[in-house]
Length: 226
Image (cartoon, rainbow, N blue to C red; front, side):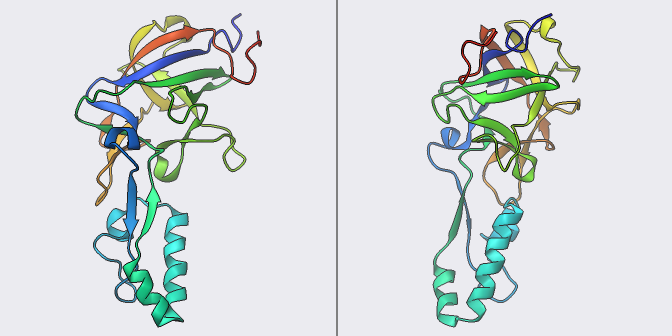
């Protein structure tokens, strides 16, 4: 019986259509969402959180605290209106419709009991793990994150059928899905946000060209494992 290491591999992933990578790679620099302070009590500006819609619960709580603080200090409120708050989205996976001249996204597919854990092997964010995080979108984070290990994924074929390791060719067209589900990751846009994310739910399934570079690949932290 094959060990977990023997069923692990390093591979590149490219979108079948368009380009897949981290948002800052796709857009040529840091990708940020901007929220401005409320111009009137209870209202957010057109460029703000209500329109963006994507900010996490934590980010919304920050906005609420800032508004409450501004109530007790009108001078501070004026300063907040002038100074936008930004949330960096650069570490999330994204997609653009154009085919860009970028190095492909390289990942370590680590087989474990119930699926694969994915770790970045591209130069950018090397060693970070992929999580389905805020708003059910995929981003790269240091693992463990808040005490949880990285998300488990399955590989599916284009009919959303799980692919057994024994049937996985070195080059294949695949879909990624949360482990134990046959619902592939999707391309998703949000109202007022100029980026396309990779999420559990969305508008279109993400189809990928997988190219295995190395089989029988070990953890970085345990290169001599069997």
